[in-house]
Amino acid sequence: MTPANLTTEQWQQVSTALVWFWAFLGSVVGFAAFFLVSYAIIPSLVSTRDLPSRAAGARPVFLVLALLFALVAIFCFVNLVRSIQVLYEIWPARWI
Image (cartoon, rainbow, N blue to C red; front, side, top):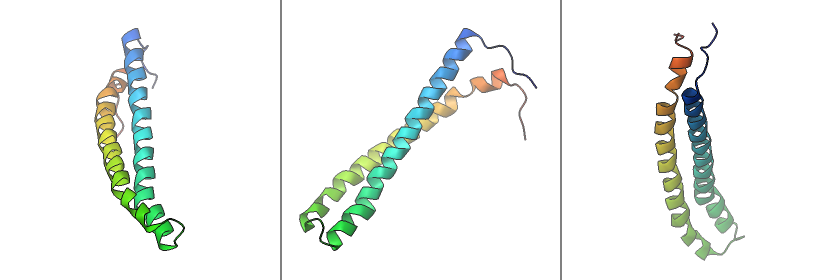
């Protein structure tokens, strides 16, 4: 099956979908990084005394940042799903 010829508006919608995809990917990576730092790296370094015990006080800051990135990821995912509806115009047949 060949796709339909794309109009300028459809190219713009595909471009918007790609922007939302990359924003989603970046926010998921940011969430994972901050979550990993707060739940694995900081406690491990504090328990081995490579970091002072007062460094554990930074964990809530990293958890809040992880939560913020998770919310941004959800927002980007919702917009990505809305943006890719143009693909049904380009390829009208759906696979099951």
